[in-house]
Image 1 (cartoon, rainbow, N blue to C red):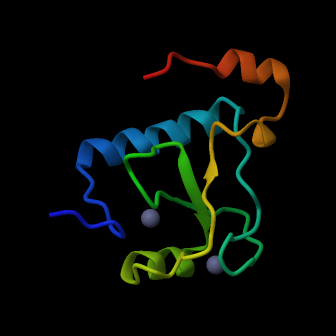
Image 2: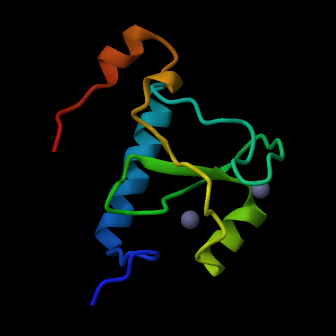
Image 3: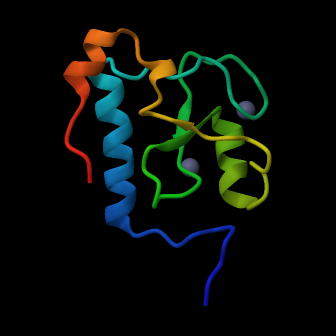
Amino acid sequence: MRRASTPESTKAERIRANGLVNSRKQSGWFKPPTNCMKCGVRKPRLDSHHPDYSKPDEVVWLCRSCHMRAHRQADFLAGVNPVRVTDQRFAPSPSALAAGQGGGE
Ligand SMILES: [Zn+2]
Ligand SMILES: [Zn+2]
């Protein structure tokens, strides 16, 4: 049985995915956007949401209320393209990029 819209995720996958995002943020490699990617509201702090935990580097940045709805409503984020925490557009500087690069998997 396969479901395309809501992939099953294991706890290990979630921890790994969130760890990747946090380490990218902490190392300064990745700068999260300041506006919710769904409703556009500006927040000092946005939640990172993984639409697919099998792609740990793909994240949608959401305000709290959009994040709650994204988990309740499977198609809520239809049309919102996730950003990649490894996307160079979000890297603050080339030197930080080189320092933050780890081994691939
Ligand atoms: Zn929002
Ligand atoms: Zn989420």
